[in-house]
Image 1: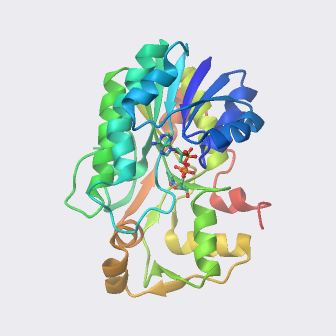
Image 2 (image 1 turned 90 degrees about the vertical axis):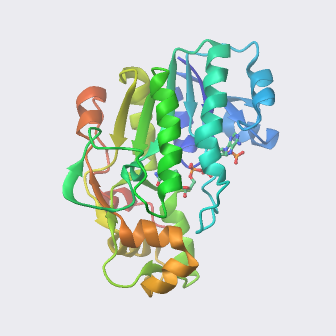
Length: 306
Ligand SMILES: NC(=O)c1ccc[n+]([C@@H]2O[C@H](COP(=O)([O-])OP(=O)(O)OC[C@H]3O[C@@H](n4cnc5c(N)ncnc54)[C@H](OP(=O)(O)O)[C@@H]3O)[C@@H](O)[C@H]2O)c1
């Protein structure tokens, strides 16, 4: 398939371009900076230049192009503020960016559309020990600080599923250029990033496994369906930090009193102290024939030590 991909230069995009080309697909990346053309070429794709948030520019850039599928993997999460802004750029990419990319899909004649969603769309709260499946309520405000992120996930999913596309609810990304690298950098700077006491837990996914699931969804996903893409082993943030510290040879993380974390980095408090979730990938395994090659972060970070 010819795949028009937004987000090719990001943490998942860098894995996804070679995964798609290895599977025999052809990637046309939508990049903002023409300086990234060579990077995409090395990964195996070609590029067109457009900002997904600029509708006219995007539609001009795709005019005359044909593609079988469009993938939305664009976020503005890197270096995002620990305080959610009302005009959060990732939310805008999930709402308005999705609208623009769905229009672009019509222009290029794409019959498939895959969008990035997140397991935190199940809500920033303690979900207990039961594994969450795609049948559980998703994208519903819960009166918590993370609600705007939930709303962003709801928006992209609602638009894409209505258009018979597919939504992938990824776990927290770790691996090259992903969250584990960011965390390792913070620990090297001795920054207190964990909530004191027991931290919450969540499900994770290595970015290479996320890319593998995305290719499987493109090829075998059912139209109008959402799939959880997580590994087999949910862990607490304390366990995550300890595993990353060991793999990256950084100092062990310092903890911050909860009240201070809530005051200085309310989004992180909401994510790491208030939220606990175990998520099941059974549907992706059943319907896409996909299983994570790294069942836990312990295996996934082994051999990637810096
Ligand atoms: N499930 C998760 O835990 C999860 C999910 C997403 C992200 N994250 C974390 O957030 C960090 C970032 O990962 P990521 O792959 O989402 O983001 P990323 O590595 O920052 O990449 C974002 C991608 O979106 C593109 N992009 C952003 N705005 C755009 C626009 N207006 N038009 C076109 N393209 C645009 C970027 O292109 P440019 O090269 O032009 O910037 C880049 O290719 C990582 O640490 C990751 O772990 C975590």
